Length: 120
Image (cartoon, rainbow, N blue to C red; front, top):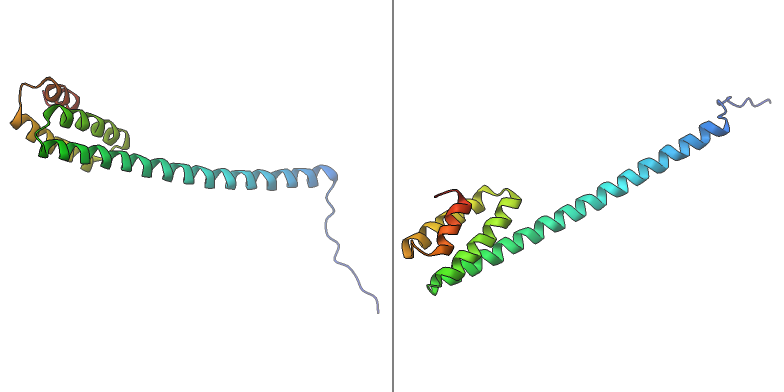
């Protein structure tokens, strides 16, 4: 009995090398994609933690009638919120700004906050 092998097209050295390069390139791209997503998720999580921390300080300051400290915390919160492009966070800062304005309208920190919020 005679066995016939299916003739497979033979690749020359250049084709083999380019195939290996393409596979390595795809592997590198997949690794970079994983690293990017992990880094992005971590930085977003850290930004949310910063926002929550500043927001907590803002609420504590309001509870103790610390207008200047609350306004400074509101500014820091606003910076983080704007970098995250969070509409919900910006709305919360605006609501707390209204409370600060009610307590002390002429305070320079509160006035600066109104400028940063575009509510002058």
